Image 1 (tube, helix red, strand yellow):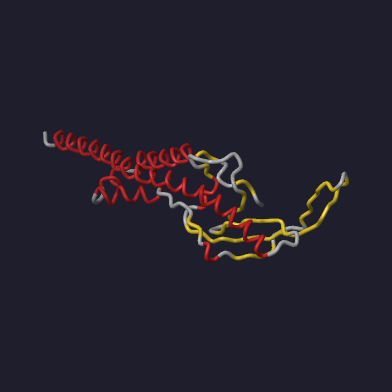
Image 2 (tube, helix red, strand yellow; image 1 turned 90 degrees about the horizontal axis):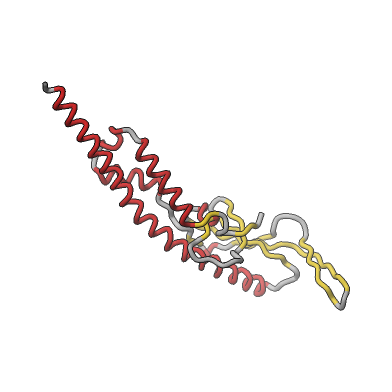
Length: 195
């Protein structure tokens, strides 16, 4: 089903929620899990789980085919009379790499009319009414829609890259605090047990 893309969760709220999830995972981790091995290895373990990869469209592999559903009907007014014409759908399927859930996240810069599409697995599906349009006309529609989507993705990529950079710093800070606390406690226990 075709819906508005980039329109469900504001980016800063979404990224804050993900960072909070990582912070909770670090807080709930066992002391031995956080003390085990090199600091950077432990940090990477948590960061990898919460790092996002912005979607990257593979436009060289666009596949066109018939759309799902029955005939499309459009209605227009012609000299005061209502006319209806039937048509069909054309789908453009564009594979992509990256985090599919980001197609539902509203970037920091957006318009009041975001692009429409459907995400299925690692494929973005754009659907257009086909009313005896030429291949060139369909290609223009697809290119226009892709241009809008790529503008949204460019902004979203910038938002996500900033988040990813800050994620490592935040994880390191939390893990260092936890490690320091565990070391202080262990030192206290060692001193008490030597008496």
